[in-house]
Length: 616
Image (cartoon, rainbow, N blue to C red; front, side, top):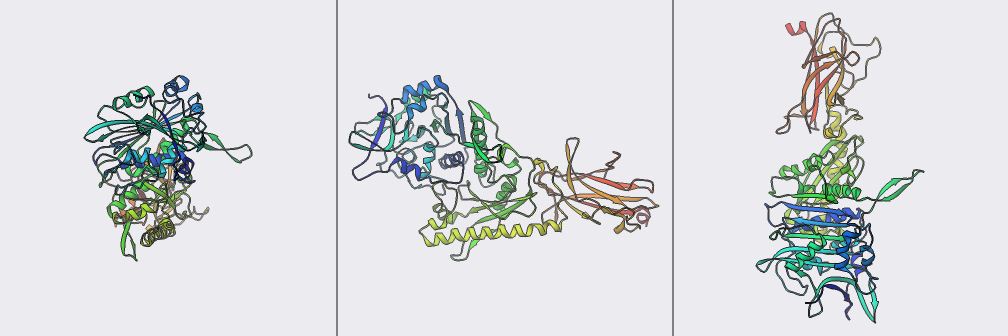
């Protein structure tokens, strides 16, 4: 049996796809390369999930093996072809700082189908799609991605343009393990022969075509290289990017100019984790219509970076809520000509967190959110389409649009290789162009209408509070206030209102706002009570409210807000409960404390009456 070795693809007499051209097909997306990598790899893992009940595991592991750890890789994969001018694999495997990036999935069917690209097969051909073909169209309904041109990011992320693929799949009635290395380098000439720059490492068959190592031999090489351990019957795929490029992060220079600094592995892991959350959250959360979800992990040298739950992140919560609303009763987006349903839309407002979080590094903006997450039936985010920013930077909004089943293919065809936009002009079919343009036009209109109406809704429910002390854990809280003199300024000296009528007994000095007291956050509002020779009873009430000002019950399973009491800011005197009784000798300026409900707007109302009025 021959020894596995590299095989460079010679150019055919009729021509062939050059490796540089394949890499360039990815284009120059606005997204960070690691973000594109997460999107492309996760889409393909999600597309090959086994069923609707098995959780899909999606892991990315970063490691720096060092010279001793790279020794098995050198012994296995070297020498490369000739003097290795195409890929530079030799230099990468001898660099002590080389990073290996391993993408693994679980709960999938692996890369099945035939081993050769010229074999007719009527089922999935995922192995050929990744290893052999270029630009193959997916045959799956409502898939998120294909191993087409987008797979180029696997190679461009590698300093050697090289990946090692080990997959375990079900093929011809049994489980089969396959292992092969693939490289995209530069085209070159050697001994009067042109080569495309595409390379495969495997066992060269009798017809001079490289095939993957199979079963026990594949498992033995995987063990030598230290690929993730798999049970003998566990299907799925591991892709190792050799010499991973981790990109850079922006830094501020001494003169205020912006520069770049290479990412450490820890910084790259945090960016990848953030990209997982921002790009994959629709399939990471539970929804009524789906029984399975994706579980994502990222690690550095075996140390896992714990990812928070997507629906617990303040900046993602409005998108999650809008997504669930769109699932349940979101309004249709409909095309007039042709008259078809295009999808469902929903939008949610929230308060912009004042404290950043490491998961924000891959967010579409570092300021207030004002975006609509576009997605197809696959359930993955295609793009965060920006809308108008609200006048008040303390308030953000997140919207979601998901395509209808009947038109999903039209939107899939409008996506570039990186699947990060819907470009109507790319479509040859006139009706498909109309559908995509109609959807984007309607989405933009609804987002714009929402942004224009939001200040009016906010005014209807009370002046919005200053949010300097707003904690990120209450980022979706929208305090509102009602009552006599709401949001009015403190009366000038000697100008307090006198009288005993309910309309003149109590005035609001400050609108409701969040403050932290002894490590706990409260909605507070300052009030002043008119002087009176007879006792005055002040009553504070709290409730939840929608952004249109209508009160409603707290969210299911949540505790509603309640009034804790009143206290004097300067003396510290406190009185518990929702009712405050003041005599003529008591101080007149008090602060109302309300413990808010999580993830709901809190309304605070204050009224007052004299004890004589109560008797009557």
